[in-house]
Image 1: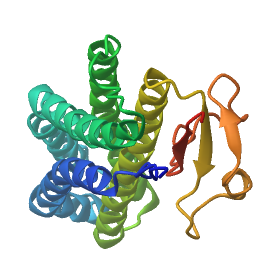
Image 2: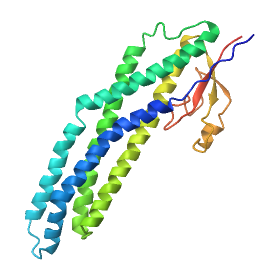
Image 3: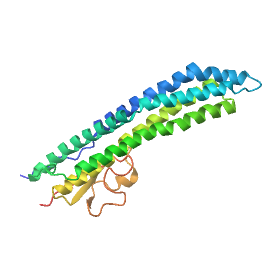
Image 4: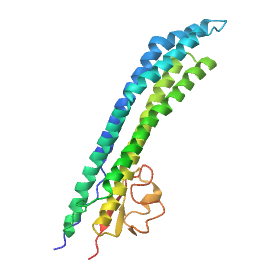
Amino acid sequence: MVRRVPPTRYPDAVAVAYYRSINQLITELGKTTLSMFDEHIRKQIKLYEADSFRQDAPLDVIRTAIDMIKGLSLNIFNSNKVQSIAQGFMNSLNLFNANNMQAQGKVKGIDPTQYEPWLESFMRTSVAENTSYITTIRDEYFPRIESIVYQGIKNGSGAKKIRDQLVERVGMTRKRAMFIAVDQTGSIMGQMTAKRHQQMGVSKFKWVTSQDERVRKTHSELSDKIFSYSDPPAVGLPGTDYRCRCVAIPVFDD
């Protein structure tokens, strides 16, 4: 009897856990930002708006408060914490994919994870890349909140509107974290799957989508089609396109 090949699974739980880890940092950063705004910046904005001579003292306090937020953020997004999140993500993703590939390899009596000279370098590079992605979230955050505060003051937007825009910016930063989590989960898993499929002698794969409303048209058109690992479609391997949750099912030669 021909054994059924277990499906390649997208690690939703790994992606969610990765997002939650990054989101904890963003939540702390957002609380720090709004706390400093409420305690120091809001009052200075009102003083500045009420001062017909537009003295620089309130702006100096505001500038100092923003610098304090930056300083506190270095502790929130400290290098050890960020690297630990990236390392934990990669360890979980590797374990998930290795178990999935081992189950597929059993159909042919092969364990593709027994000898993987590529894995150490791949893991190290991926951890470094994701550490950089997380750090970039912080680095991109500050120019935007500075712009919100100073442009708001310049335009006379008022403290409430400026605060609302800061809250909105925190929300947009969360969306960026979600993008990174989903994008990196799919991309790295797609690469790991390809490596391990070829390690077990698989040269072709079937493209399978997540079969929901988020699947883009170009990927839906590839669904259930067979491709060679040596000649993948123009969009690349399943999972490697941005925010792709498609997977590759191994095609074993009879």
